[in-house]
Length: 180
Picture 1 (spheres, one colour):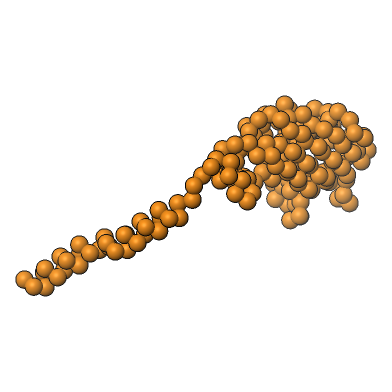
Picture 2 (picture 1 turned 90 degrees about the horizontal axis):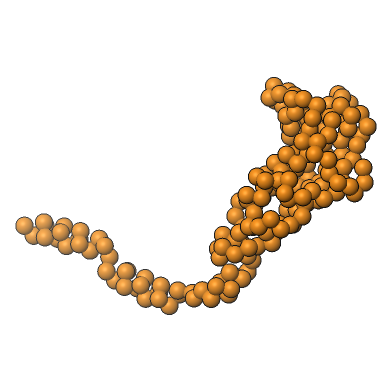
């Protein structure tokens, strides 16, 4: 299939035998768990998936996912536009036992019947490639929020703290015990 509407599901028996390709845009509305990770519902997801059988007649899904979405900056709590990209290489298996027997370069995708939900697959892969922490580059947050650096105040506090050590009380108690 060329650039088209992404179907809700594919029949794994047919798509692997036909060596199908699926390319196109997927609506964020079809990815509710992924939307929960975002700042808003604006953005786009592009998929390019190839469905092939390997020599062992095992169904392999390979391709690339790309998304341009907005997340929350962890410094200033404002929206931040990011681009996600993930190269995937999945083997469709029926259960956990089959997944354990896969080659190390393949990730398992468990599909117990012949109905493979594409939105679910894309959503899971996008969630896995999300960065743990997102923030604006190069001090944009500091400039945007007019934060003031605490260098001068911090230096004075550090000097006074070093002048009066919290252990000075212990030292005076030790000295008073030695004189008794």
